[in-house]
Image (cartoon, rainbow, N blue to C red; front, top):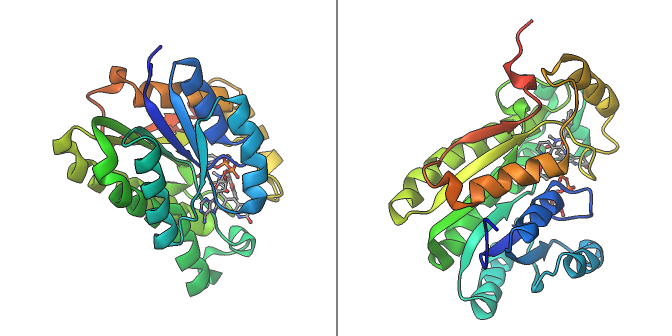
Length: 254
Ligand code: NAD
Ligand code: 0WE
C-alpha cells in the first residue's frame, strides 16, 4: 500500500483506455484517495461512472485553458480535502490538422493552442495548487519520445512535449525546497482516445513491436505502476526527471 490515505488529484481521464485511468487504478490498489477532473459535460458523463468504479470521492470541472476554471477547481479541492498529496497531469491537445503533413505549416493559433493545453497547463496547475500541496507531494505529467526525436506527424505536439519536459525541470527547481517533487513519464504509444484516429498509429505500434528491446507495446498498467512508484516515497530522491516506460524503444540506435 504505497499510497495509503494519500489524496490524489487526477486530471485527464476520458475513458477506461486513458493513461490517467491506468494511473488512478494503480493508485487505488495502493490505498490512495482519488478525485477526478473533467473538461466539459461530455467528459463528465464518462468520468462519473469511472469515478464510481474506482471509488473516487468527488469529480470537478476544470478546463486548463481557463484560469478561472483552474482557480475554481483549486477552491473546490481546498473545501473538500484541504490539501493534495499527488497531482496527475495527463492532458494534451492539438488540432487534428496539425498532427499530419509538414511541421513547417503549423499556424500561430495551432501552435498556441497545443502549447497552451499541453505544456502551459502544467505551470498553471502547479501555481494554482501550490499552497494546497503537502510538503512531500508528488506531481506527475505524461510525455512522449517525440519531444526529443522527430516522429512523423507528431509535429507541434513534439514541440509542446519539449516545453513540457523543460517545464518539469524548472518547476522541480521552484518546488524542490518545499519537498515537492515533479516528474514526467514518457510512455510508448498506447491506443487511447487521443491516439485513435491518428493516421498511421497502427504502424507506429507495429514498429515498436518489431524494434523495441522487449518486442511489445506498453499498457496503461505498465505506466500506472511507474506512476505509482514516482508518486510514492520510494522515489523520494527523484525530481525533474523524465522516466521512459516504452519497452526500451528509445535506447535503440540501428
Ligand atoms: P486521453 O484522450 O484519454 O486523455 C487526454 C485528456 O486530456 C482527456 O481526458 C481530455 O479530456 C483532456 N483534455 C483535453 N483538453 C483539455 C482541456 N482544455 N482541459 C482539461 N483537460 C483536457 O489520451 P491519453 O493518451 O491517455 O493522453 C494522456 C496524456 O498522455 C497526454 O498528455 C498524452 O500526450 C500523453 N501520452 C499519450 C501517449 C499515447 O500513445 N496514448 C503516449 C505518451 C504520452
Ligand atoms: O500525445 C499523444 C497524443 C496527443 C494528441 C492526440 C490528438 C488526436 C485527436 C493531441 N491532440 C489530439 N487532437 C485530436 O484531435 N501521443 C503521444 C499519441 C500519439 O499521437 C500521435 C502520435 C502518437 C504516438 C500523432 C502523430 C504521430 C504519432
